Length: 325
Picture (cartoon, rainbow, N blue to C red):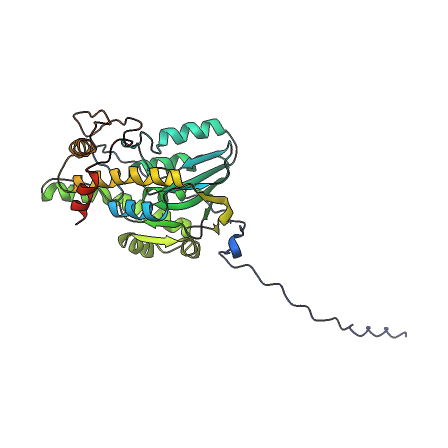
């Protein structure tokens, strides 16, 4: 009987180091752009049934945006790019603003193609932001959100509609609860609080699903009105990758205009917080500026006149200083 031939001795091979596995949230060295991971889009958010309540960005957020993010823009554009370098909702003082109607029209023009949204916004009308979020998440192709400067308040909700979110290292993403201006007795206040609660919960759920964080933790960050830097937003899952530094630029002319108009927006909210209606606040500011600058309707639903913030500013600095004292 033949014996089976012995197995050859194993050949010694030189040791090879195992390549390091990528981290869950890669951070690009020296401004290099990493490939962001795509995530499932969260579900649609509820649209408010009441139209007599508006949710705003707090004046302090406008101040931080003016200081740290005003004038930051993208270097490159394209025919599939939607820019959001303005407040969310129609803006009385500039005649601009980002609205769901405008975004829907831009998506129709882009068609069935991937979309890039370039964003630098202090927020604005939270309910308009929810509507924009719902419009974006219905787009059939991939959506890339690029936060250049800031995505605060309503703008941070819109950012959650992206399949991938890229953010600058020096940029910020800010989340908080719905912030409204309301008047009335305790029954009115309780009714308003009950009205806002489901929207805060819906936002917390969307943030939690996108970031894969616990809803309870997200709710605490919203309660604390949390600003997240680019690296922290990536670490917590609200964003996926850093934008390269050379994809953004600071336009000094745009920065100056952003800051001027921003002063008017913040001042209007401060006057409303002091008890004035929006019409009264706008009329007072325009009077101090020295020219009407905008056509006011007798109700609070005033329409904007483009260029309304480009008039004489004499006397306005004193009013701002007195309100901030």
